[in-house]
Length: 90
Image (cartoon, rainbow, N blue to C red; front, side, top):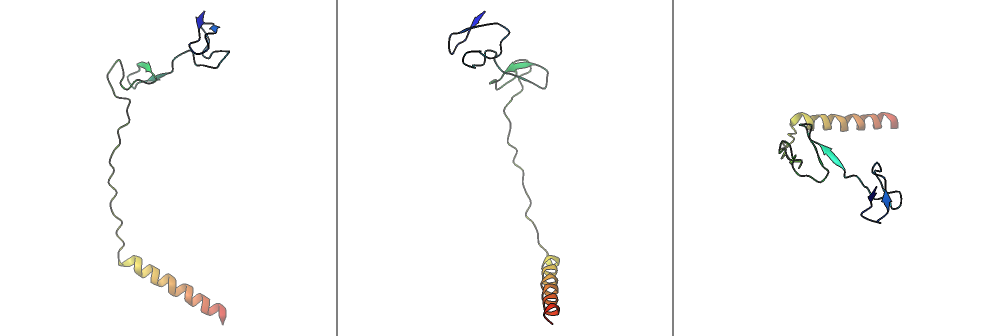
């Protein structure tokens, strides 16, 4: 039998949560890519030393180049819509 740290209620060793207050009795763990089990709030693996912190990668996005073809496409679209409107009116 163990005692809950939060409410001081006795509970069985197999319980994951306290039946009285719902406090987690077993610490959460996370697995490293090496297979080692570590505490949930660990910043580094205790077996291989790998960092659990996610590194932000600076991804460079190239600027979008709008060439002459884009302007021509817009011009033809506007002309087509105008011609269609004129045909519908007549």
